[in-house]
Length: 266
Image 1: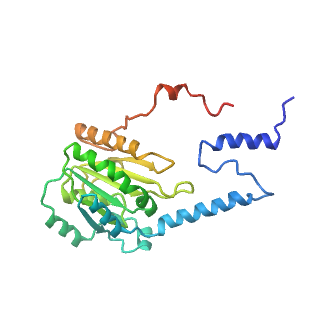
Image 2 (image 1 turned 180 degrees about the vertical axis):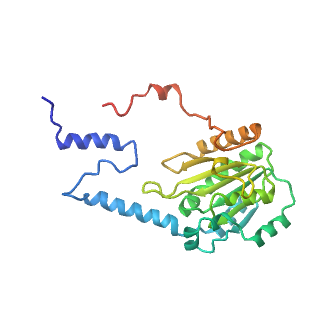
C-alpha cells in the first residue's frame, strides 16, 4: 500500500521548495480562498507593481547625482507627453521630438564611441534603485578600455528603441539602454540592459539587440550584468554586429556547482 502523506508533510515539502524561488507556491487555502497572510502579500505585491509603473522618476535629482559623479548628462523626453499617453502609445515612446533631434545634431560635434541612455520605462522603481549603482561599475570600466563617452542621456517616457535615435544622433557605434522592465508580482524593481552595435533610427529591431534582464536584488547582480555586457561589447567590436547572432558565452558555473545535490531530491 502507498503511504499516505499527511498535510503537515505536504507543508514541509512546499517549504523546502519555496526557499529556492520567489514564485507563489504552496500558499495553502482557507476553504475555497487563500489564507489571510498570502492574500495580503499578493495585494501588497500588486500595489508595488502598480506604483513602479505610475510613480514618476525624479530625473532632475538623478541628473544632479550623476553630475556629482563627474559625468555630463543630457535630459531628454520622448513624444509621449505624459504617462497615460506613454502607456497607450508605445510608438511615441520610441521617438524624440523633431526639434529636439535637430538641437542634438547641432550641439553634438565630438566623436564618441558609446552612448548610454537611462530610460524610466515601465518601472521607475528599478531605475531609482539600480541605475546609478550599475553606472558606478560600468563607467570606469568603459573608460579603462579607452572608450569616448557621450553625455549620459536620461529619457522620460521612453522605450528601448529611443536609443537608436540618440545613438544615430551622436554617431556612436555602441548603444547601451538601461531601462525599467515591466514589473512582476515578485520583482517590481527589475532593470534591463539593451545593447546594440551601430544602432540607427528605423533600422534596428529587437533581433539586432542583446538583452541582459532581471537585474535586481533577488536576480542578476550588478557585477554579473557588467561581466555580460563587457563581453558582448568586446565580441561586437570584433564581429561587427550585435543581436541574436551574438551569443552570451559568459558563465559562472564551476565544479562545485556541478557537484551540488539537486534540491528537488529529498
